[in-house]
Length: 488
Image (cartoon, rainbow, N blue to C red; front, top):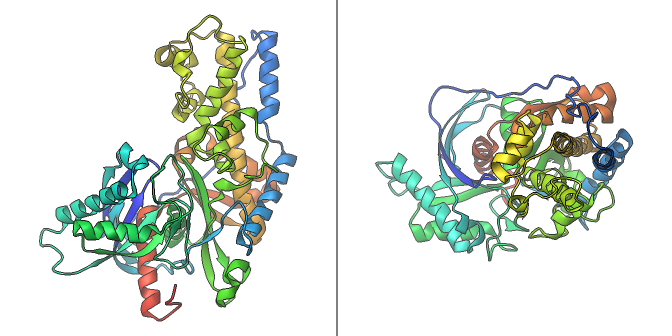
């Protein structure tokens, strides 16, 4: 039996226990229709506000030519990441060798989770969850990993009344942050993302830190595999749906994973791996265009970057991910208010604090929740009708830009690998909850590939941190038992 830990974007550690005889598949099929526009009538909008709306439309709109340019630059960045010298996008080898066959079986996992692989592309799962306290997100490494170990211990105590009788359980550790890996049970954290800033972890192998905490707490577990949640999503969804060739996460952060041949990874050629050996690559593509040569950054994007904990990093992520979309809208509104174009003689102090407008607000606006209601009840700001129309249009522009830029990453992997038809396992709060994000992404893929873009299908994803980690733990144990690439 295996276990899998996952530290989530939503600041939750979940514990999963999977039993007996059911399985499921979750798929979202995107109809190829043009997403609705919320631009609406602007007849009563004063000329000065109309000029601002037009300027913002020019600033945030990405046409077909610009999409193709960004996509081409993205392909080059992916290639550079695989090269010996490397690039902005790390393109991290995961030491996950190939897709599952679908006949794997055994027990597993953690968020904390335990999953039972039933074979015939089926699995069972049961779960629990623990919320990560805020102090753990910015405290010390001991605080974080002791907390994780405490959760594991509670899980075992709750679910193994008879104890383990001296057994030490293998663990699949889903750690959703960029790590450099030389083997599957090793990972040096390159940098924190998604609002975490735990001291003493960057530049250090996280596996010994966790195992030391497990030892301190007397938890009988050993790490078998360290994986990224996006890699787990790729493997888990392919297990159910073999058409899946790419996995993407569009949530608080963003990322992608796909399968590459070892012979196409120049930075691994020194290891003399068989050229056709498939290797899952964790792209960590939130770092695309840190050099600012491709993406159409606005002054608002530059402010977000400058005031972030990691200026100059994660440029792509800061333009498309859920953590930042609300802040982009807030900065636009503050800018217009300071120019006395909107909210004249009103107290706007409640939106003066960074990130006081969350991305959920944009979702509500796009779903036709009345702008006046949102701003008056939450921020004490009374909006005129022209102001409401401006805010609604800016919200739409931010959402459209996010979806279209997100699609360039998917298209870049397809172009790089010559993929003409595939399913893309898609997950994350923005993909799953932000209105029209999927439809806008599909429209962008059609802009990039014409009608052939319809063959690149965005699908709902299986549980990567849980089932994916379980599968990878099982694959790793089976591979090493068979004497295949044991050193990795």
